[in-house]
Structure formats: structure tokens, C-alpha cells
Amino acid sequence: MNQIRIKFRRLAHASDLALPSYATEGAVGIDIAAAIDRPTCLQPGAIMAIPTGFAMELPPGYEAQIRPRSGLALKHGLTIANAPGTIDSDYRGEIAVILLNNGKRAFTVTRGMRIAQMVLAAVTIITPIEVNDLDETERAAGGFGSTGL
Image (cartoon, rainbow, N blue to C red; front, side, top):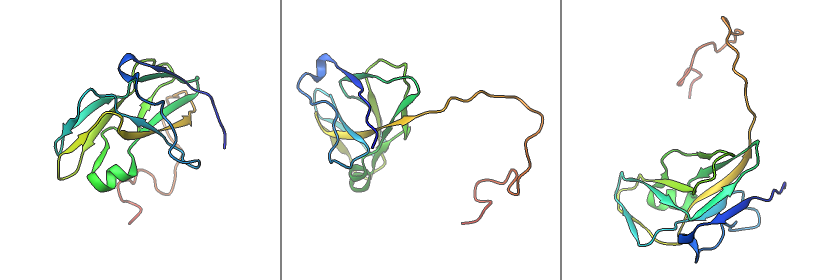
């Protein structure tokens, strides 16, 4: 498994929180926690940006993807509204998680609760080239179920 060192800057409101960390040796996503002052209730259908108390420095050519935690999604319907959320390599502000309660009951987020996971991914930068025609394929413009179930 590849390893890369990423700088994290702790913000004042996260002084008592641990750095993001992996829950197990084989985990791909690093868990990130809520840096909120008091318990916050997300009603069904509610969307809220939850601060994490950390900023980071990604090297060029990488992005960080913010993804739901599977247990929160399965048990409570909690997900990431823009999943996967993207943190660009030139962003230096606080990481926030846009939580969405897709569940049937209210869900309370508490300080230090692991609310999402972050996966580092290499990116390829494209150069758009305008053309008049594209190569033909058997599928052509068929989409949204055109290849069957």
C-alpha cells in the first residue's frame, strides 16, 4: 500500500480532538470527526455542514474525497449530500462535512463523533479539445438504462 504524508493544521475549536485516523490497519478511509460545540440534531431530510476543526495541505495531483461511513448510512440513513465531496489540492480552509439525514428519525451529531471518511486519490488533469465529431461506438448516445438491467 502506498503512503504519503499529509500536513494537517489543527484549528482552535479542535484542541481536544484527535487527528483524523484509520480505524483498522486495512482501512482505506481515514475517519474524520465533528468539531461542534454542542450536540446538533439533524431532522429527517436536513442538510448541514459540520466542521471538523482541521485544515490540510494536499500535494498537487491529489484530491481528498469525503465519503459516508457505512454504519451511519445503514443504521441511520446518514450520508454525504455531495458524495463524494471533493477537497482540492489548493484548498487550505477548514474541512467540513455536508451531512444529509436520509433516515426516518432525527439523528444527533455529538462532538468527536466520527461522521465521515476521507480517501486520498490521485487525479488526472484533462485538456478539453473541441471537435465537430466523436468516434462512433455501438452504444452511441444511449444512456440511463439503455444497456438493460
